[in-house]
Figure 1 (tube, one colour):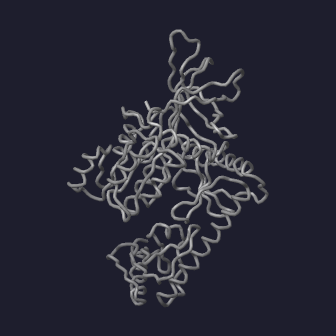
Figure 2 (cartoon, rainbow, N blue to C red):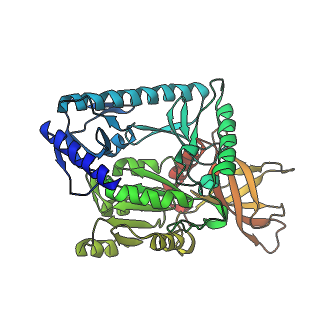
Length: 450
């Protein structure tokens, strides 16, 4: 079999070379690598034109190629190039496949808007993400109106990697609201977890240590990188371990993401086409409400100057190459659980908070932060208790809705009330951005900080 695949790869490499497409094939390898130069016409996306000068691909068998770089092209299915005789014909195939994918994404966007479902365009308008809600607590990737990928975290974190199709969900045509869609997704996630999770009697995968977030809370991480050599290994290592990972290739977009949501740790490449990781580490610390967020600098290889700069800017870690799973796990545990410094600044604020199911008067906050709040309450709460809260914002008719977990309590002598430290677990879609807007407003009031 391997010998046959190697012959197919060599045959296709020679055929592509005759078309003027640069390829390379090493004897005995089951694939060839190539570079397809594209014309000047940009590829359309949900965010506007995307200019691609060249596409890197690998051969599959004797008549197919799989595009892998730039990263948006990786989402295209393998191209059947058997009937093609010229480079231009292969490029036409690529553009047709891209147009089909974008047409399906545009249809999915209109469908989600019609349902009123919170969603976000990702990766320069080449992907759609359905945001978490009440029934689902992790984002889902929307490929089209008839295909959604269930999250690879939470209940599906241990799904057998050999069965990726198990995470494909086909929505019903009769959904009338975002709630209908969420209920369908929640049912699909439960069914998928029950039917396809790896048999616990089997030996675990070699690289399968699981980072257990604090008290059941999922860790949020942001990865800022524009090279697949760093992106793919990190995504492969982090996403199956209960880490909510968001990958962004532009530093400005990454910093803007903090206006909508907060992250526990930042991974950034040392080198970026539009900046560098050392500038990002500096800029993150200036974001409203951030105190000491851990920033990990990733480098393709050991670079003495880069390591020295990382130490000078007090980066949490400098990692040359892709860290092995055990190193990555230890680093994440340290960054998310044992980092002694406070991640988010606290601000004095008195806001009314209604706990779902609680009788009597609302509670009041003593202080608030991006990731939680300190609540003064007369209710008897124990550490680990989880509640849904409606937080009333000054000047806003609608409250911010969030699920929180009690992580600390303190009895104040002479008072019947207690101070309860609440860590946020998840917001109702769109409410986190409103909460962060309040934090940004308070950040301009220096006396409010403590």
